[in-house]
Image 1 (cartoon, rainbow, N blue to C red):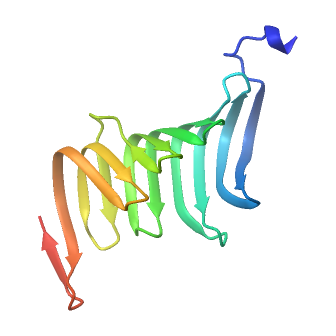
Image 2 (image 1 turned 120 degrees about the vertical axis):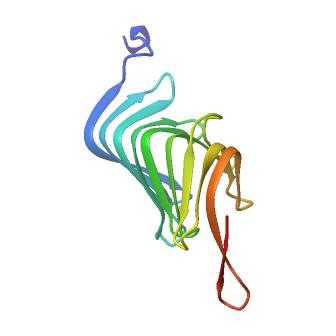
Amino acid sequence: MTDEISEDIPDAVLSDFTHIAVRAGTETFRILAGKGENYDKKKESHFYEVEFRELNAEGQVVTLGECDKALLYLDSDNIELWGNLSFYSAEEEATILAEYLFWDDGEGILTGEPDSWVVIRKDSGSSLQGTGFTAYLRENRVILEESVSGSWVEEEETGGEEKVE
């Protein structure tokens, strides 16, 4: 009978729950959501009113965030995030604000839509915004392609700071 159910109808609907991803016996990330829908045929999980946490191998939270909606592709661990997106990286000491982002888990690349604004705020006081956002997390490299504005604070080797605008 389940073969006859449309792939657009969720196999399960959950309220106020936690989704935990485990790799090699270690928790890698956790999604807390007000509502979740699982689509087995599509190999997708849809989450609403989302909080998420990425953990390192020691179990420490390295990324903390929230958004209105997330779509997790179960066969790849890629994820799309929409609406009031905000997340903080403890390692980078930075916050990213956006309306949409796509995480390619296999490549380690985070991208925004070409014309969507993304704001990056560092704890050091730096703040940049622009469109055409791509972050190559394995290379620790971020690109904003167009309409870039803001200021960047660089620490000098002497321990002081230099402000670049």
